[in-house]
Image 1 (cartoon, rainbow, N blue to C red):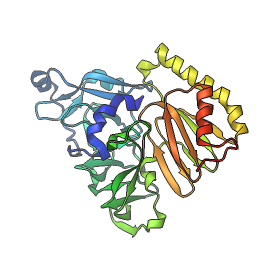
Image 2: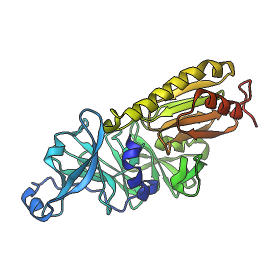
Image 3: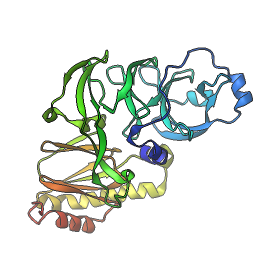
Image 4: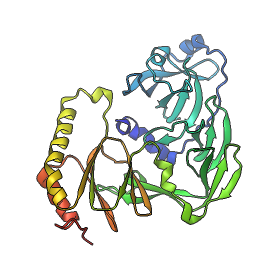
Length: 340
């Protein structure tokens, strides 16, 4: 799964920050001869294959004689490109550790692409978010920085507008079950504080966003399923695995157990008035009343217990039907009403 691929590398770019500037690459000819002379071995990268799987590849990112980055052609042929003719790549170089967008010739077009849902931010309304020195901006498919990175937070453009903030910061609002000693142990994050603005594609401020009108967690909600909670609920999550793991017997058994035990508890949970839903995504959004939260599980398999007016609870790993029912009784009472 994506989180497994890049979690360790992303630890050093917490808050989606990066010290590497986003820039347009000069579309001149790549000096592959100089590259082979000066850099016979390249940097490992990760990208999505045309078949859909995400893998790590050694000697993937090379550098030509003028210092420009490019992707080895043997890998370019395997990449999945979007409608703009660009493919997202994660650069494992210790001095960069960032997402890039490259074209069909393997040239790096955009650097410093924002991390979204443990992968590269996608284009929305023709623009993609970039991060330079922890400041957010926007670039177009040609790599031109159309809105300079100066914001502390930025949502994607939709219908010609985006919500941005100055002076805001990412805050952990729910530690994971295991530890809460650092920001890396947080499952739920939200943007808090600062001044919030609505801007157009020219970067002009259209209006200030009142406190009550903000939904800051929508910054993290792109391409994630959203669950509106109005009763006791268990969201059982099983994040997708990498293609390399898809034939792994242990992974198959874990998924089979997860599904089997889920089937066993549906009926007894229903009698308790508890909804049970299975999610096969690396992250999801939960809305309880006016509160919106995003879960980005530290581990790929587990259960999210939630109910109105009660602090959510997460348990990781596959649980047997009896253990899951016991956990449900511990969190909800026998009538499906949450304990206070």
